[in-house]
Amino acid sequence: MKQPLDAFYVIFQVLQNAVLIIPGVGNLLFRGPFAEITRGWYAIVGVTILMNMLLNCFVPAGVTVAKMIVNVFMRCFFRMGVAHQAELLELYTHPEFDIKQKYAQLLTTVFVTLMYGAGLPLLYFLACAFMFCQYWADKYCLLWGSRRPPHYDTKMATEAIESMLYAVPFHCVLAILMYGQTCVFPSNPLGGDLGNLVDEGSGYTPGMLQQFIPQVTREPAPLGAHRMRKQAVVFKRHFGFLIV
Image (cartoon, rainbow, N blue to C red; front, side, top):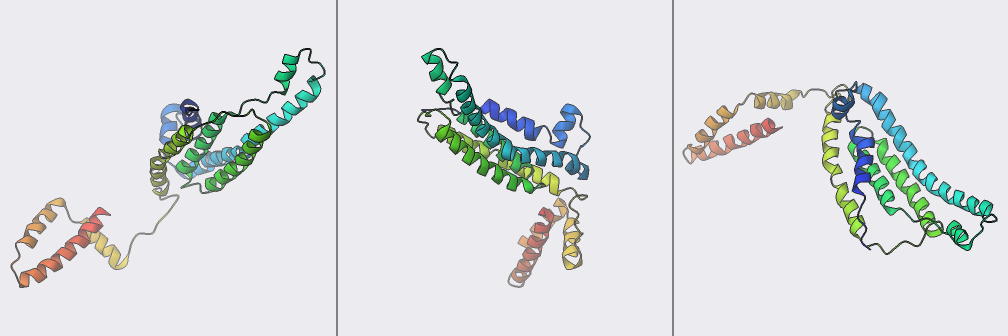
């Protein structure tokens, strides 16, 4: 059975839990107080993300198990008051296993973890805890508290895996924004010979490089070949520092 992934529910969960709390987006939509990922952002928004993910580790799994317990008590309390066989069958029939919602919860956790895991490394441990708890809760619910599911193919799993690839550029962009804040991750300036090379390379302009290349190519041999190789090594070194 081909069952598509509930893309609308996934997008809604990701927007609610991950995208709207980005400093630029939040400031644009709701005029939040943080324009950049500073220390104050970690103290308020970062702690909120961690608390949400901490609850996310246990609440979905707990709700899954709680629904099964509620169904057992309802059968014990209401089976004596059932007047028809059809109502009794409905009371004892297990609910369907909502696999689309499970995939949406998984993708939301993956997106939030990859987007903010660079600055909040505890998210990786919370994501592992969520997957562990959710796996056993879903396994118990699927075997003992759900109807026999249809024969699914690999379409939904393939779509879920392909959707996770979109979290990679978000992870890279947010990592650059988080690690680029000097107030959060300070770094000492380069010194010594390496600092001198960087300062020397930063003084070169594209016009100077264009004048330097013809001089290298017009050098006569054989003495010029040795000097040309020496200049080429210096040029590669300076050009590498210009790129950095």
